[in-house]
Image 1 (cartoon, rainbow, N blue to C red):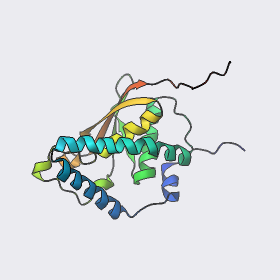
Image 2: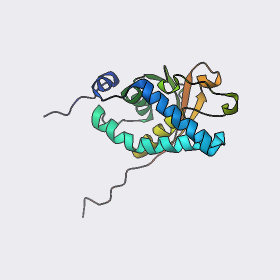
Image 3: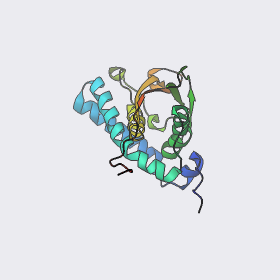
Image 4: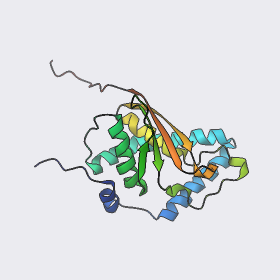
Length: 186
């Protein structure tokens, strides 16, 4: 039997089990609010959201690879496109675009058309340093690390901070060669 063809983000999103969008958004908001109460420092909340996202990403990649039938990407550019077109659609129901590539092809921006995490959200003046959706940068970083790509993911633009879009910069730091625990030739 031939291998299954890669599935588009729309096809996967249509077939995957979902939770109510408002419940998801409000639950995430409650988590962020509790972190703000517990940690008090906005920068600590940003770090905690990133770490939570990283922990999610290292587990989410397995589900992504199992359900999407995506084969190994040939380079970082293809990987970024798969994240934007398939990954965001599969897990958040939104599409993103990849722009602003550097000359080396190791740094790009992922611009979200829509962000379901920010429905019903307004940041108070005391939280202006907060990257409310920092969990997304951690998810991307964790997932890419599991496929041997060490990255740095940072927010460039955030509509909650007055910008005109949601933009993440993804920078490939290095591609870790795969190591196998055994040798075939022995």
